[in-house]
Image (cartoon, rainbow, N blue to C red; front, side, top):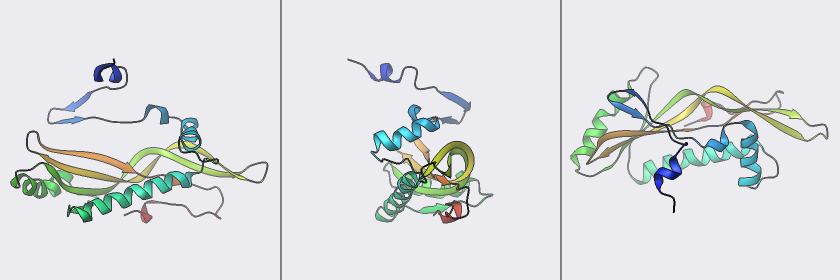
Length: 182
């Protein structure tokens, strides 16, 4: 029977970049190239046509879920400004959570940041049906920072990006972009 170390062997790397922080970058290894994204949409999700609208729908659902979680659990949702130092903004929320004596989500920060994501282009197929190409590009995306207080560990945060960009070649299709994000 495999244990956790066996499962993670060759899939996890620890990169320590400074003494007071540890960054653990999680990713899905089978979604690193465009063909794998197409396979994810068709084989895994079961769609016949690999459209970026599928991923936009997933991203929108995630953003709504974060907003619902924030409202239901009375967790502050804080929008970071361009020049804000995130930890300075969140320090008071972490302190308030620490005072409760319980582990929990102290606040959720929202920022627009550049990330390397899959973008798409639309073109007309030879049969007249639109088809999409997927490629990596740097785009401004919505990032959620879940700031946590743990009674044993102390402060921490988990960063999750939720975004997919549609970039059509013609002006006939609307482009989704950061301005449409929460």
